[in-house]
Length: 123
Image (cartoon, rainbow, N blue to C red):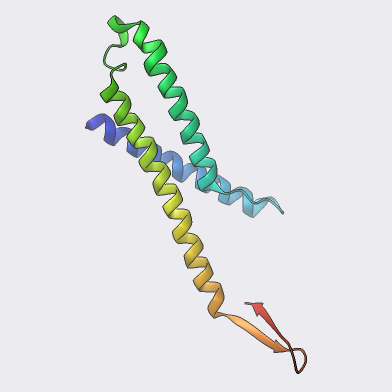
């Protein structure tokens, strides 16, 4: 259980770093539209695949040296931490998108451009 919590905390820390870096890139580079949650999920998926390869191919061949890493329960703990961090990233993105949409929908400037149309400008 301690390894699971350490893995989860380290994955959430990596999530925070990826989100901060993507936010800074979006602010500093004009025209950049990096989605930190999607980038983190892609990184977590790649890490999960590499972890599976290490667990079942590399560590399985060296049972005497890496026996406690090659068990299915150890892999399941690491796998669960990757999945929970990816779910947290996507939930964070969903909540931020809903908050942003609710924030921008209330503040619109309506300009009557003709007797048949109106322009809605977000503030």
